[in-house]
Length: 416
Image (cartoon, rainbow, N blue to C red; front, side, top):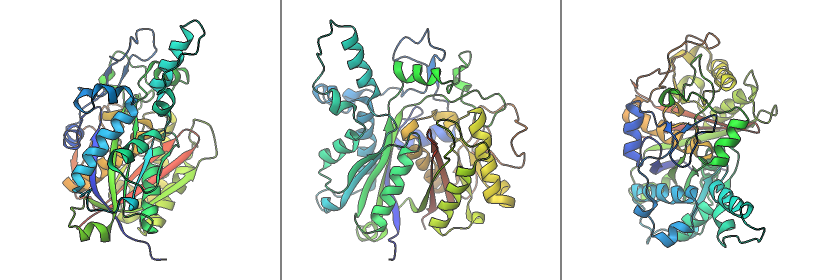
């Protein structure tokens, strides 16, 4: 069966370095750090007292008070970013066949703050189960795409992918395949997360996953640096409108990029640690290249998973050197998590957006906060350190990996 071509026609972003698509891009190319001390709760007794929170986001700018109270923050973020992407796409919602529009969304955790609030309220009470009637529908991870479809009347496939930090990359790959196979004309995809909470920070601290650089929060996320000590937790959302090329062309849509393919694999190694030799990462990039029909020498840029964990960064770069061989030094490799922090289930979406915008503007965003060379990392690799680099990017890869050994990789080509 011939596979339909799939293109990106709209995008929306709500991130710690910018609350719109344009503001996000400006934050990226300027090397802006989104990390600062936590304001959502008193973190004085926590090992890590900082995170990449959204700045200046007020739900009342987007929802009335009654509606906002029914939505966990991760769903609010999903609705705001998807609204921007739909508007950006120029879709005429009155003219399209809404039975052929799907919403496939990623969330690694979902409504953690809602769960935390309800359980703490119960624990502090007299044992009488007085739970909010919106507790379950606010918390469940699939409620974000449900709300997007309800708002706009989209009646195609509708569900959430949950694969930890690979969730929204998985959602994009599923969306790609639904359109390729002819089941949908359009899919709203992406991911959202709102885990900067007492439970989120405490849980990740307990497993020693987070940076504890409380003396310098803004420089704490330092992928590939020899002094890296863990990731910085972030929050927000990214949304993309994927559309069959025929559908987009017929309506005269602007096209940002073509999504050529995706790859999936599993480390089958450890609950949280990557395979030290990057075996699963090698396989996922090879799978992605094969699915896309692209040779390694065609890839110009890779937005890495690059979380700034001691083991993960080295394993991923080893895998890149293995897959791309002598071409690896010609690729601009970066980690935008150095600026946004790690958005968990939303990471794949906002990083795919960064890759697409790098192609559009011929600028690769930097990996900031790098001061000390790690002798475990191949010195030939161009890690786009500390400053954005201008170059033509025709093909860009985005890697996203999750606890449990989930690996996802997506490849985009500049549209012309």
